Image (cartoon, rainbow, N blue to C red):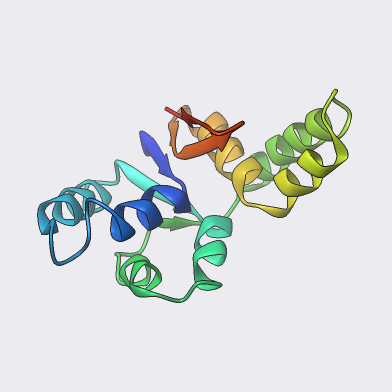
Length: 133
C-alpha cells in the first residue's frame, strides 16, 4: 500500500513555481523514484482533474508506470460515500459543499483512509495556506 497519495495541486504548484521541470529535475526524479517504489500514488479522479489542464504536468503524470494511477476499489467507493455524506450533512456552506464534491479531494481522502496512507496536498482556506499531510 502506498504511504502517500498525491493531489494535483502539489504537482501544479511545483511545476509553475520553485520546482519547474527544467530548473529542478531532482524534485521530479525524487517523485519518480518513489512512484517506482510504490510509495506515491494518485487516485484516478486526480488524474482526471489534471487531464482538464492538459499541460506538461499531465504529460508527466501519464508517463509514470502502471500502478501510479489507482482506480477506486469498492472499499474506497464506500469511504467516498461516507466522506461525501459527512460534508453534505455537516455545518458547511452550500458553496463549499459544491466545490468539495466537484473536485477529487474526497476521493483522495478515501484512498488514503482505506490504505492507511497520507494525503499530500496544499489547500488554501481563508487566504492562509493549509498544508495537508
